[in-house]
Image (tube, rainbow, N blue to C red):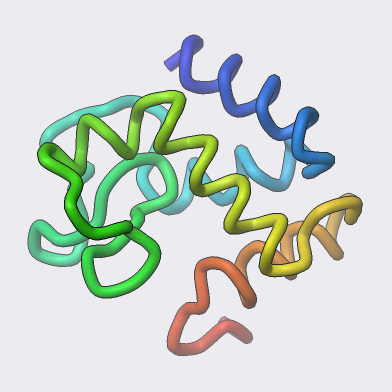
Length: 110
């Protein structure tokens, strides 16, 4: 867990994302430890940000769970967060942008 937390904090700062907001999303999506039961949506969502085969997970990934937990996968997710408008935001604004624009849940208000 410490390695994932440290990597997410370090990379979040590089992308001008609020590390606390990014970690909060990771804790509620895929957690911060790579465990087999953390693969979500009936086996289609992977990593700390639950990158989904039908959504944010890029095609052609051999082992999607391993990739989503790697530095390359986390970099990819953080870049997508920036592209969704979360870069430079802090606190509640950052969290709201990540959840509503990057994660895009069915019911963002809940």
